[in-house]
Length: 412
Image 1 (cartoon, one colour):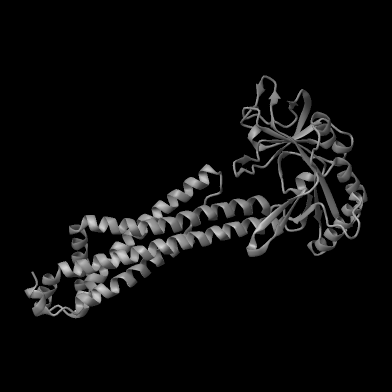
Image 2 (image 1 turned 90 degrees about the vertical axis):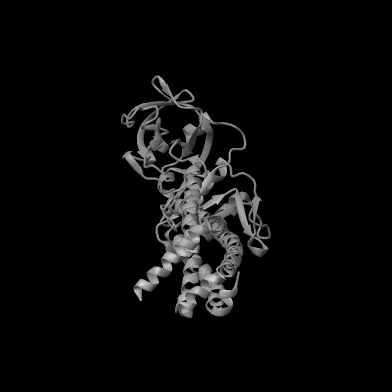
């Protein structure tokens, strides 16, 4: 039995080899569908890994008060409402008046995204983001200090000339030396580095390791452009108290803005896990798109593969008659043609998987996403190619097995 099966495989491979052009075209058709599926799923998985890595450290017990408000519309669409900027007076009043227990309120703003940082005779490109923060910002944002320490309340209240920097500065202007206790210059102001953050990588081309954090009052004196928008982040120790703390925060900020009970909120409030879920919902839509594209392509490749096998059966009618005259059974003939279909399908699937992984890796690398091997997509692709082979090969194999040996021998 095994020798017969091995002989069928050998005949199937020889047949594929003798029809190389037709086989290559069919393999490419199958590979395109699998490439679309694996490539998109790989890129989406890399995006999800990056998002989860960036936001997981923030936990699900943090919420933000911000200028923008996201509203879900019909059919799952979202609308971004642009509210008035949140001023320093308002964030200061909120911090002073928000007295919900077991909470920490972080205040921050981005002074610039194009600063030039200097250390002795070295200086960076003018692409550094400088943020003014208070003592709770790093903790609320899930940022961890690798070397040195983070800000404390005395640094902020006394407006000390200190800074916390991203990890890329180590190999940048500091040339591998420990930056802690060294002095950098930001727009001519001197700051002693007290801490270096753990690496966070890049998200959507935004390098999070090229940032400098300084006390908020120092930042306000250096960056005094009008209409600066501030951000508030509140962390609750007990997740069970999160909803109650959010309600209290809404009431507090409405009072600060002098809103009447009939007026809608003119500010946004968002939980950290809501942000993750909103972004992941986008990746879910991309997953669906990947399946639709691949299913359409694979459906077309199934038809193409079936037609090729039907043509093959017709061309080899005389061979089928000879084999049957020599005693080959129907199952043997059917198995031979079915194996040919299966081999072509698996070659196309393997090629599609390799190309898909390559595309996913290229996309992840170019966008600085955390790429991982898409095992789930690979298993799906393998299963789909087997299914395609079964669907496309069953009918031609059955047709070959039913050939009348006498009529087949007469075929020219």
